[in-house]
Length: 318
Image: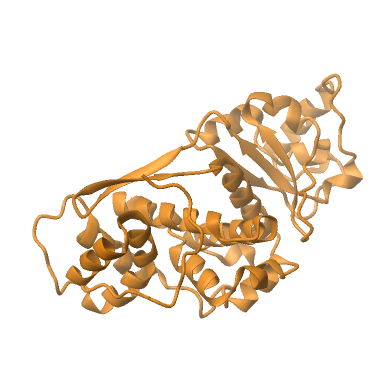
């Protein structure tokens, strides 16, 4: 059945489908909504090796599937109209379709259980606790962003960062702490250390901004996501964002300082970026290496430590 989120804040109403029951799950949507989505086989292909994916729904659905604008959509409409409704599967009425922000597809058989890397010559390992739940909240975040009037103006990195911020908001409301926010924070830092390709999902500047400026109670008190976006100056072009050149420089510095392929140290490389990078990397290094070892490593690379931020309760690391 369509998931009505159990949190009290206004949230996107989404149909959450597991991959192994995808076809029957999608059949709950009205035909006017189904015609705008990929077919089940196309969705499986698009999901690839990921453990979750969001499929936003247009704000306004056509009155009938045969009025869809594209030839492919009209062709699929004919097919959908002829598809029998699976036994025992309740359909959502067409009048309800406009309330649906989209579909979240979950593959519960995939997804990482931990992430690891090498820091200061030592292998470190971070368990990803309840990652399936965090993935669901993250994907609901993508749907929420798509419903913002300005949602289509964000870059891919900004979209991913806001989806993590949405996850942080729901976690604060439901769990009453930032534990899962810090888990996602450390995960994003470790992923960028491992490979620059993960810059696309590096949400650390946004998560840090949220968790250092707002308490758990303050964040949880927001009744809509747009209010959080505004409070943190994260509208398109807002002061809370780094520009693309800045992001690229930070990613390059992360690889130069922590990357495994670096053989020649360059202590002056991007020296003006090092203090801020230290502020963002410090909580992760401290969590994984301990205070003393992290401080020594950061001092050796001229990375600044922010002693004013507390990571609070933490999750398992080994």
